[in-house]
Image (cartoon, rainbow, N blue to C red; front, side, top):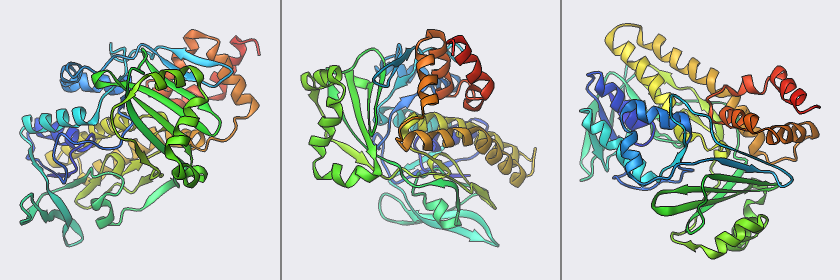
Length: 397
């Protein structure tokens, strides 16, 4: 099989299938280590997955700090609590993509997958309506054709594989926010910090090398204005949080500003004859939940099981891939819906404010809420009328 794209969805898919004895080729136009725009965050379930894959010690050795808490600050009150443990793993981590992606690429190669960096896929080889391979250029520019029983597109939001097979989006909402971020020394605290200030959100995620990634997000309607004075707008948003602003002014920015407004929300049709999509190629959303890496890991595991079943003859391949997509959509649809509500940055309704304030007033409930956002408790279950009624009753409302 061939995997197009070697980052947080592609390399794990390749690694897991190679470990089961399948012959796997992974190609990526990038060379590793290399950077990519990202929130970097590994929620606790993602950290637990890395341990299950035998890769957690490598990530910890990179010096990424443990998060003792998340602080979700709404101005008048804040939810401040540790994340709940998953499979004995307690702390979220925020890992630079120059570190994480290299670990994953190396793990795929160690599992006997063939990894070709600097490889550009120009298109797919199709015979009798089924994808049977890829054609492209290697790092020398030479034209190459490779064939396989299945091609997996793990090549991101603007996936070549998705384009070539005509994969259609559904459940789609256009970009709702734009995000700017930079790395600072001397700003990190003991956990992740999220400050909601109406039409601006400010986020601080400590990461490798004693740095913190400081994000500012604004609605897309403000993007043009933001771009006219990026430094001024960025600083003005941070100034809405005076204590944080003092830390940022006392800190040192160590890298250039990065930005993106290309943050659509959608599922794509993600399987067909001889092909499948995983990661951002098949499911993409605004980064307000900072769950993209975790979601990619989860989908990679599910897809690897489905492909193994098809390649081994345990199940019909089309049936197995359809099961992967059905499972993905059932699990992530509530998170996609929540993401689009949060990313809209609309003023919360009074009942929403009352619920969040009730959660903030109860330390145990605050941890449960963070567990719902990180996926260790299904978000639909947590936000069910019965559970909301329980929370409000405990708060005496």
